[in-house]
Image (cartoon, rainbow, N blue to C red):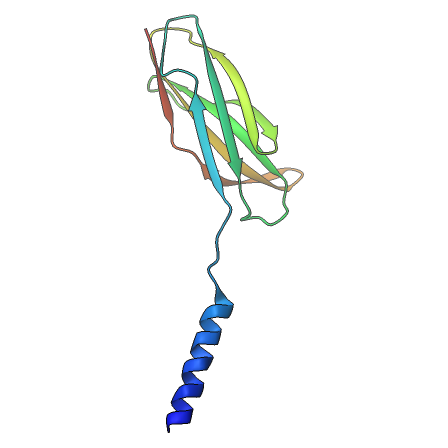
Length: 124
């Protein structure tokens, strides 16, 4: 009985060690140079994103903008994992930016992998 328990314990430990922890290397972020600007000034926006959720599928990183309560508008998309953009603040109020990472599944189809939190810039 004692040897059977020892064998079962060793087997369980071996399975636990062999399994390890799976860690996805996926992340996305967006940042701005300043959270407050005057009308007409440029806002520096940068984003980075990477994902291994789609294996070796090429990825496309997009920067989006929302003015006030309007809908999101895509500003720029680039192949790869980083993008930078200078955006003029057109009028007073709130500007928001976000990044989205897409997998290029086929020539005419892309799948959304993840979306960053939005960052806000106040224009005065």
